[in-house]
Image 1 (tube, protein in one colour):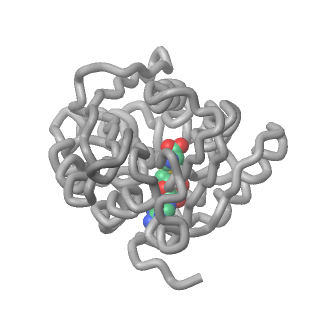
Image 2: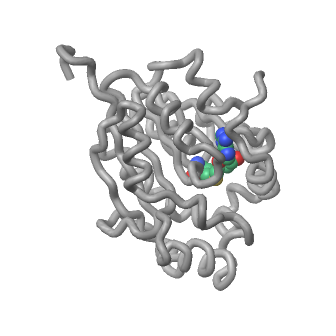
Length: 241
Ligand code: SAH
């Protein structure tokens, strides 16, 4: 494997430290567990996942990858944290679900698998990489013309600072301190711009509202904190949709 450049080793180490508790719904990854049904529902708006070829970039221990595979999709999960991939593989075996987990960056995977997927997902990962724009470009490369890309991240607003950093890390202690860096949060307009530059068409921006007390999440019109973006890679001119 060539050394990937677009990665922050400290970020990988921080996530890797939680490997053994990744699938514990009461552990440090609890917010991801709570967000997962809403994220899955958003991806499913594009249609049934059965039979779809999906790449999940920054899949971690496999919460979303496994859920999509359980719906009948053929899922490849990419991450650069080897211990998280081990956890993901073991968990998939226990669940009896097949997912192809690979220790690879999206940019590397795109070299050999350009256009190989119907859908690409990248959840809660862009705010942890040095060059998120390059990841968006890779997501665009990975899907076929007519394919769809789903991304979730955190907006760079005072409200997001309050909820995702002060609230989640300090007051409620839901996440380990240092999980999120405010400067790395991404505005929807920035994400939309990177998508456009990569040739993607913006279909939707939706808020992902998280209630840590009720432990529920839902899709809303308020994208001030967590949000999801749905892109499509256009068909070449003249091709049928
Ligand atoms: N997408 C998963 C995990 C989110 S946590 C979910 O939402 O359930 C962020 C994940 O991104 C971690 O697993 C971390 O190891 C991974 N990650 C961080 N930088 C990465 C990079 N450059 N390439 C691939 N994965 C990366």
